[in-house]
Length: 184
Image (cartoon, rainbow, N blue to C red):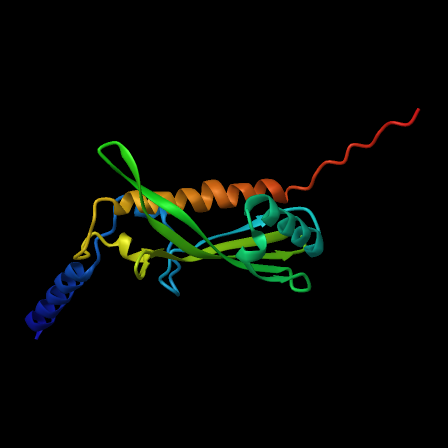
């Protein structure tokens, strides 16, 4: 009986080890929501201001960041302090030192404002060509269609989400310092 249990434990351990997906190198910098399985960039940022003040700053930021914010946003609800939208950006690859377009990444974003803080979320990243291709496939190096460009694409998604979108939003959400003129 002990031998049978030991054999079952060994078989289970080996089958579990072989069933694990290989992850793309550097993919640990790509956050995946454990509930949805989607690449999700989300952060709560503490910032001075009421929900309405933060919502107004976020609305102004939309006009600063996007060329056509009316077409990008789907929801702007001042009462709940929520802004939702859909946007896209290009990703690239290099062939013989020539930069070429790999495709368009579409994603959803949400900005939620509360007194003293706001939260942004970017998720549902999809490569669009002739059809939609979920970017989560790029995390699996054991995928039958694995391409050596996938880590580059993932890095571009991370760079856009953190270094571009989030950095710009954080900078704009800081309250402007009012300089009062001295009366004399």
